[in-house]
Image (tube, rainbow, N blue to C red; front, side):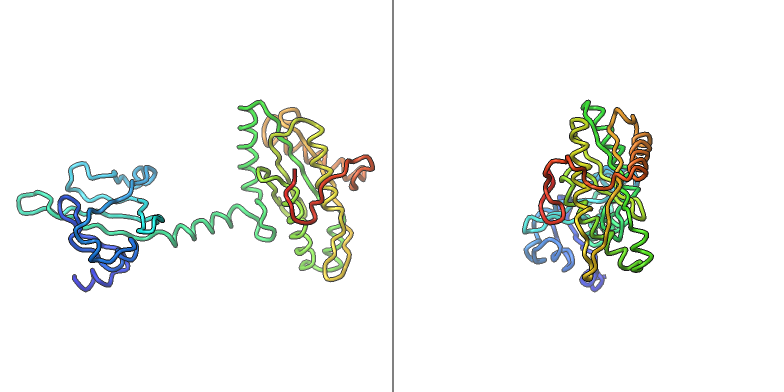
Length: 299
C-alpha cells in the first residue's frame, strides 16, 4: 500500500478530520508545486465542484452525511497561482465508533484530457483545410447572431461567396493547387473580417461571412466590395497567376429573412443572381477600400 501510494500517477492526500494534511504523495506534491514535507500540517483546500458534474454524477460538493464518499470535477490551484482541472474523489474513513477521523483524497489531473477535448472540439467545428468555421459552427453562430440582433433591434449581414474559375484551376492544375488556392482565399477572407465577424467555409469553393452590427444597405455593400476586391487581387502560386474572382450574394436581417434558414436562402439566391449577371468584379463606382490581401484588420 505504501509503495502504491508513493508511485501512483494520481495525487493522493490523507488528512485528519479537520482536513489537515497528514501525508501527500509525490504526484500530488508535483501538482501543487510543493514538497510532501511542505504540505504536511497544512489544510487541504479543494476547489468548488462543478455543478454540471454534480448533476451528471450525483456528486454533491460535500458528502451530506460526512461519511459517504463523493467525487466531482474541481479546479485546483498551483503554488505559482495557476490552476489545473482535476477529478477528485474523497473517501471519509470512520473509526470504530463511526466518527470520521481521516479523509483519503485522490486527484486525477485533467489538463491533458481537457486539452485534447478542446482540440477535438476545434476539429469538429472548423474546416481542416482552411481553419475557418465549418457548416456546423456557421449554423450555430448565425442562429445566435440573429437572436442577439433581435433582442437589440439590430441588423445582421450575411454574405455568400462562390469562387468563379475555381473548377477550371482544379481540373487543370490538380487538387493540391486547388487546396492551396482555397487556403489563400480563406486567409484573405479572414483579413476582411472584423474580430467579431464569422468567416466560414461551407464546402468546396463556397464561403460565408456573418457581420453583426451593420446599419443598413450601405454597410452591406461596403462588406461585399471589400471581399470582392480582396479575391479579385491576383493569386500567384508557384509563379503561376491564377485568375479567380467571386460572385457574392448578400442578405440583411431582418428585412430578407427572420430566421437563419430564410436569411441563408436569400443570400444564396442573391449569389446565384450575381453569378448569372456576371457581377464578379469590383464595381467602377466602388469607394477606395482597405487591402485585405495583406495583414491588417478590416474596418
